[in-house]
Image (tube, rainbow, N blue to C red):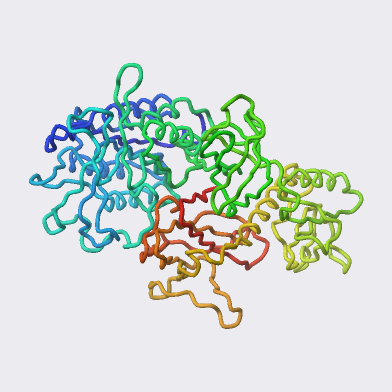
Length: 623
């Protein structure tokens, strides 16, 4: 796959462990070495990784995957990596837990990977903890954000593998029961690299980071299983087998999200209690440096008879009566795919909805993993109202924009500027603005309008977005894209829970924090004059979210930016926050977040909103 990545160095450290000399026979594994050998072949043959850049640690290599061997190989990799290189770390073996020695784990346990020389009583513990891996990731991502982590293991405390080693087997080793005082001293010291409430993804392995991509075999409380190829009888980890299969067939322009959506259902079909997870920069091209804009689609998560469930609900703007076209998994845009069906939404909940299949290309072609794109929204659904105006000589340009607006389910045209949410004008060249000219602020400070431009005005009279030259062929498409973003922004901003008797009402505490001059985190107080919390450009902020309810809650946090963009701050929709617990976002070293005013934003101030979505069931608000 040709692309910007070809000019970068590419490195891979692949660790596969079948043999555990200090563990009993029934704890030995079979497919882990096959996993990393297969992944090495995929990286070299399909993604241009040089053989010299791939390091294998297995039962048969000169350097064995012991604790010291793995840690030294990780250190050597950091030393070799240069700025913006592409890096892969793949671990296949046992996962487990040991007692937390640093005091940074709310449940008192550190998640671990188990090296070849790892053991359980009376053997010494040699596990490598999540804290150690995270500290390594911090060092690595200071050099490059283009890191892919694959963990085909688990760390559940329940072992279901049969005692004779038969069956497909799972990659979990029971937690080490010894107390922290009976374990080797922590290599992290007394002060941990993570806060006690560090938000982690559903895999439970590492704090969520948008800089890297993490793919894990299962959720934090599940087991990763092994899988035997139907032909040849070769054993693999289920995640690695199905992921490698999709990577091998991936075409140019494929993202991590695309291959994951095809691989994950196959893993779950093999083992119903195993749900692979993807976290971080999921819309990055595979083993590349390019992050793409995610397409606006809704995933189909299940089908029963003639009804499908979609992974989107009222929080995503779904409404009863909306029609969607369905395409195969991996379809980025409808025009690039082959339609397999049409569905109509019949019931909407907070984060999911049901839809009836009204047409299907072939029987059973609408299945889990497909992508649905909205084509028609009910007439009573709230749309963004646009008023379009231009001098007569630009009538053809206005007609083209009007046609594009009429085709968008989130937008509608109105005939009166007074009835519009946004007013859009073509402003011809002018040296100064008269009292009758639209958008007079374009001539502020004596500036002249040198060429015809599109200008959009918000209800407060300010520019809603940068101006765009009429002569530029992409300007109309950019305008429509921006208005769609603003429409989605308003729908999300207007969301309220209609259930006043909700068990979570008033039970979720949210505190906005700021870093003061002494580098301490303090509550961000409202300004006495404006009544709003005011941040300057590059000020650091953080959030503390408390679960004061009597049930576990799933938390997602969205950032509604000053430009109308909507992006995730925290995606914890598959891992609950237990009653009485809290999480902090942005307080950990390496996870600091700042506010900033985009250079292209036409104003010098704006409003940023953080929307905390708490639900009693799993929710995925990722774009």
